[in-house]
Amino acid sequence: MNLKTQYEFLFVGRDDSTFLENYSYNVSEGDSGSAQIFMCLEIQNNPADAEVIGERLFESFKKSFFSQKDERDSYVRFENSLKELNRVVDGFREATNSGH
Image (tube, rainbow, N blue to C red; front, side, top):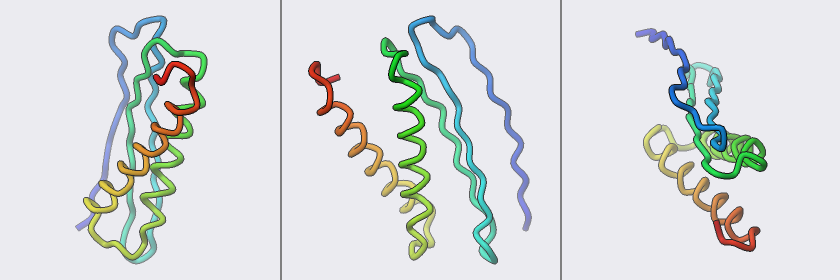
């Protein structure tokens, strides 16, 4: 069965001090089909570094998710990728003086 995904992005009530971005990635995985990743990210009170942080988070998730070629269960891949994101966020937190 072929599935087709249709999506749109909508922002309502974005604050000036908030970074809000949608990321998406679609890749074909050969004979096994394709995979799509969507991430909606909001970072409050830190718009200066938010774009770099957002791109780093999405790239880390994407790299982690698609590097798990042995794992056929997408739920397990997703959970493992979220754990990797937590490590990246902890790294950002440790790099700041305030711990935020």
